Length: 464
Image (cartoon, rainbow, N blue to C red; front, side, top):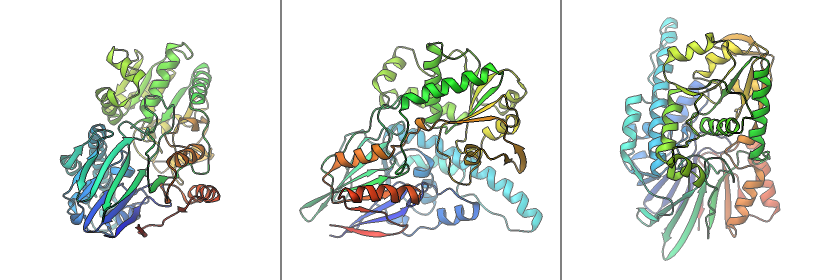
């Protein structure tokens, strides 16, 4: 029986992760991420499949970030009918993330169609709607960490804690092949040791092959402890001059980590007691999921939540759902901290806060997550003097502080340590990284005598 691995997306880029294992007549899909790019490319890539969704026998979802789960509703529209195996936390979080994605797509298409109508272009449809996204999780099947489960003929799966976000998993796939066993690890995305809220990643053993991310294959993070001290310094400096602190943040995991750090700083009286707002209905719902799925969190956080001392229960913390309340924050001139989505400053409520605060030198923008090329977030990180928000130019006068230590992705040292702990391996496949980062990591691994590949989109390899 031939066992093949095909790289469908998320190679030489950090978006649209998806990979296919074929074992004889059995097909198992790893992730179905949404490719995020310019509008025409977005629609072309996310609607073009180099395989038949109807033929997939099982799917395994690593975690609930949109670049890993965001194309599932579209696959279902194209005929996907198999069960999707993941953790119970990922099932619930993916439901929230997918519905939000569907809502954003409907709103985006509504705006685009207004423009198209004016210039005589044809009407377009969203990839999927909020209603279609809501139906997707009906085929999800939760399994626990460490539970070995037969997902398809001759294919067994176990999920291990990836330490990346709540419920994230490293997949270990055992494929029975004519009396032999092929063991494949899928570590995309991989977390770090000592992250707040989460457990450390679990190392899979006795692997033959490993598919691993390379997002920070050429970079080193500062210690996570440094994130809290840099956040303290940035907030204190801004509040002393009467400014606002704007923190663009991914709604899943990063927003909760920021709140956790703020809770620690307030408990130790290291920052002033000022209003803190999490301005995102989605982040609000996700934070509730953190408390509901506290058994996935590290022991300290789980114990604190159980005894009523949740890190998300600050007296000066308010979660904002209504748009009217969000807009009112811009009229409020008091010093405050605003955490708002989206992380790369390309959409969401953070755009309105940036629009209203970016030109005031008393204010600060604290960047706590990865900002991809060509995004508004990257332009802010690069401190470009003039930036565009809603098509209007603004001077970037607000102070910008970037805290790379808060990344939820393993850095070069941690990726190398992870591979070393998994040895011996027949081969390592590096995915989920911009080309320069992937190449740097590949060169180091190759220099250590490890057989490493850097696949391209739709490349297929034989596993023996």
